[in-house]
Length: 147
Image 1 (cartoon, rainbow, N blue to C red):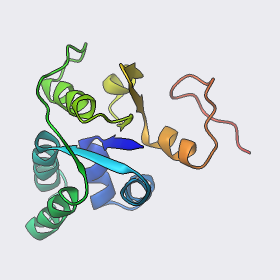
Image 2 (image 1 turned 90 degrees about the vertical axis):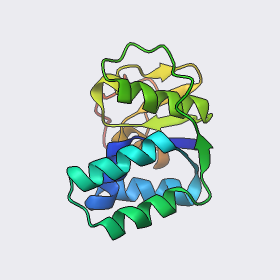
Image 3 (image 1 turned 45 degrees about the horizontal axis):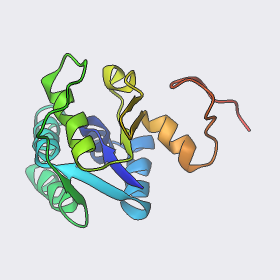
Image 4 (image 1 turned 90 degrees about the horizontal axis):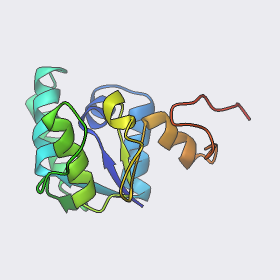
């Protein structure tokens, strides 16, 4: 499956331990990661400005994101009802790269649920799908029953 990870999912996976780091490893190992120059630029900015990550760590991550990944372009931009132009570029990158799933924690993007062939899910929803606990009839964001 072709998977596009939003900037903050990648930044969280890099800067912290937990769901996003596990999810990042799973996508790298078992799926085709779709990336764009726009995404890589945002990752550099967020890791440097927000997380104060060391430059060597950022460059190592950028190198990793450029290895064995599907390259996409943010252009042409899709006509989407999103307030942040950077979010439009992220969703457009996922669409233009042929991603099947976009994983994001951005509430405004998640509310789209689906754009064309692109399914939009939260990190938790994707993790539950991977583990076989996905309730396809539950609305996006609904808590899943414990098995």
